Amino acid sequence: MAAEIINGKDLAQELRMSLKDEVTELKQKGINPHLTVVLVGDNPASRSYVKGKEKAAAEVGISSSVIELPATTSEEELLDQIHKLNEDSVVNGILVQLPLPKHISEQKVIDTINPNKDVDGFHPINVGKMMLGEDTFLPCTPYGIITMLKSRNINIEGKHAVIIGRSNIVGKPVGQLLLNENATVTYCHSRTANLRELTSKADILIVAIGRPNAITADDIKEGAVVIDVGINRLETGKLTGDVDFNSAVEKASYITPVPKGVGPMTIAMLLKNTVKAAKGLENR
Ligand SMILES: Nc1nc(=O)c2c([nH]1)NC[C@@H]1CN(c3ccc(C(=O)N[C@@H](CCC(=O)O)C(=O)O)cc3)C=[N+]21
Image (cartoon, rainbow, N blue to C red; front, side, top):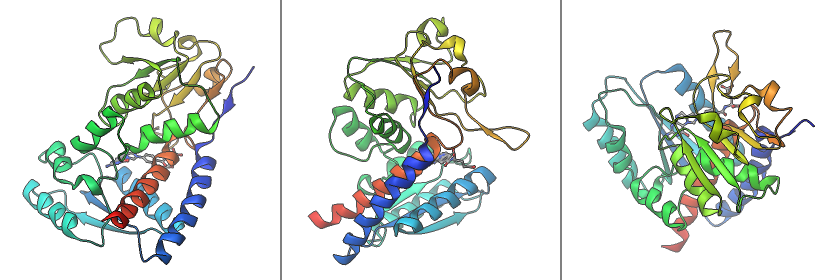
């Protein structure tokens, strides 16, 4: 039987509608959520993501600004800019679009963002809190994935979750969040021996490899939940994930498509984190 497709675009739309109501209420209390995105260089993919973020923010009533800096910006100049945003009381959320030019240390930049404005959830303090299961900004893509699973009441507790990919922004944190939900978690990566042996045991398979069709029906267990985190732009201009959707959809119980899967959820969770950052002010 074919899998149920979890449409992230529709779910993100629902989330934005409820966030919009929340933002309306906050505004009545004089709280105006504001997101600032910093874009260094003119990578066309980054520019298009930033456009998507601005549009989504506007839709829920979150004001946003984009600071565009040339690719030649020095690390010191970027850190100065972040210090200014840290001190600017209008700014609730700061997102520095990754990747950054090679001469700038991404970790140094992330470490400089005020953890209370770190709506990406990348700051070491927030990563640590996530590990401890404390309330914090959860990284947007993993948070979106968990939200997609919960939207369908997919049971996580006691399930074997297999993650392919160990990046700091997707693989590692999504494994941690699934562990926090009492899954049994296996991390796989480019050096993993006998990958298929592991993927075929997964009740929940999270695929963040970065290569089209890297995972097919032959790699998955009958009835598995398959989450495709890949965003690959083909030469034709078409967007595709890491999973061979057409074969996997016949074997999985649930599957996320690309486009209209995890991507739009990532943006919705960014907005949710921005609202959370703005609400933090109430408690001061
Ligand atoms: N500091 C930082 N935070 C990020 O969250 C971050 C980042 N840097 N750098 C780049 C990646 C990538 N990313 C995406 C978000 C939404 C879609 C998305 O909405 N995709 C649509 C399609 C959009 C299109 O057609 O181009 C979809 O999958 O349906 C994709 C990719 C966030 N990122």
